[in-house]
Amino acid sequence: MCGILGVVAKTAVNQLLYDGLLLLQHRGQDAAGIVTSEHKAFHMHKGPGMVRDVFRTRNMRSLSGGTGIGHCRYPTAGSAFNAGEAQPFYVNSPFGIVLGHNGNLTNSEVLKQEMFRQDLRHINTNSDSEVLLNVLAHELELAAKGQKLDPETIFTAVANVHRRCRGAYAVVALIAGHGLLAFRDPFGIRPLVFGRNHTDEGPEYLVASESVALTAFGFELVRDVLPGEAIFIDEGGTFNSRQCAAKPVLAPCIFEYVYLARPDSVMDAVSVYESRLHMGRKLSEKIRRTMPHLEIDVVIPVPDTSRPAALELAHGLNVTYREGFIRNRYIGRTFIMPGQAIRKKSVRQKLSVVGLEFKDKNVLIVDDSIVRGTTGREIVQMAREAGASKVFFASAAPPVRFPNVYGIDMPTRAELIATGRNEEQVAREIGADAVIYQDLDALKDAVRAVNPKLTQFETSCFDGVYITGDVTSEYLASIERQRDAGRQESVEDAEDNQLDLNAA
Image (tube, rainbow, N blue to C red; front, top):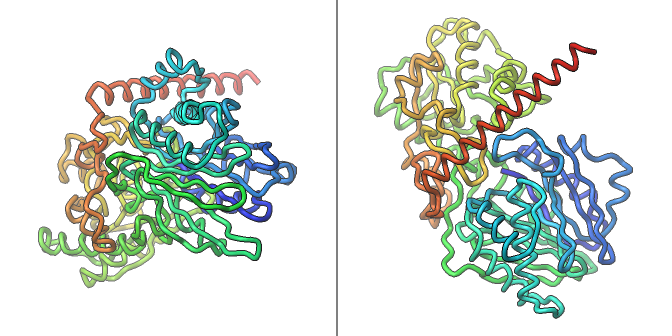
């Protein structure tokens, strides 16, 4: 999960890209970067941290030009930050290309070998995004055959990228002296939308992970980039699009609607907020059907993502809705923090309790999902410390039992609390009196209620079915080994840092 932006405008785009990345900051807090284009020259600044920490006035002044892309990074492999992996990435051959990528390639290791042995390209980092960039650059070189690029040539190259790459990818790229290219994988797993703004000088275009980054700046949301589709907008603002995949199938990641996306976004013609209301309604139906004996005094959401579901759940049960947790907005999202110890420590820093909403009450706490159980365990304990008589815990999502390989940081089965446990066992693990999970079919229906045309979803973290068809048990095992190695490296780095502090 990362946030990406691409814009072709009639005026300087540095401020727009900066503000757009702030709107997409929830999609990644690890690093941020902006590249602008002016007279065939790229201007780049990127670095570790949140958007507001990476860019200063002097950096913004250097980012001149009316075309650009932006990226905020989220580490999909659970590794600590490596400065060389901040995006966008750049190659100077054959045309000069910068690229930002949201997703995860499942065949990046195979592609690295092809790059080295056949394409004669060197990969400098462990990032699959750099692999994707080099595949694109190589295919552009082959398609151009030494001639000047045109939209037809670019779309041919993207078709060959689809042929070679597997996994999830939503991409924005600048080609020096030509314009902005954006494309989406043949299953449309990760989101990508584009909008248009009319000016006296002609149309401007903005491509983004979520619609909120368009509408905030007055751009009209045109539509989603289709699965397998590529759009190319030259520096003069001429728009071109082409379906570049042989057999595209729209199967968006359903976890986007559960947790990842902002509630005020619209993706694949689905209002995220409305879909979450339906999730709450489905949960209330399940509780009435399967647990009518629960005596619930109050429904309380875990802010902020679960609020719409909790509100509709309370309405469906005819139970009082209250805000019992107050969120400190200066603490990052625990789900995307790179270490279990850091996540656990940050829960109580992030949330505080309104005691009167818990004391002597049977409380139903609603969260968007239960992934590792760390947050849930701490929240249940906080509710009990505040005097709750009973604590029930509801998840707007089904049990997360399988690794996600398409760009979400939950790659190992051992970290997932629902793996090998039923609802009663999960309840004991987090200290709750009962746990209620959403059913997968109900979750699909909740999203489909907003857009009935959606017939398929990417739901691998719930059912273990990987829609790209290339994910093997060996691949999953290799990811787990890499994550374990990365975790050990992070622990050793922390110990080294502590030794340095002690010595000082």
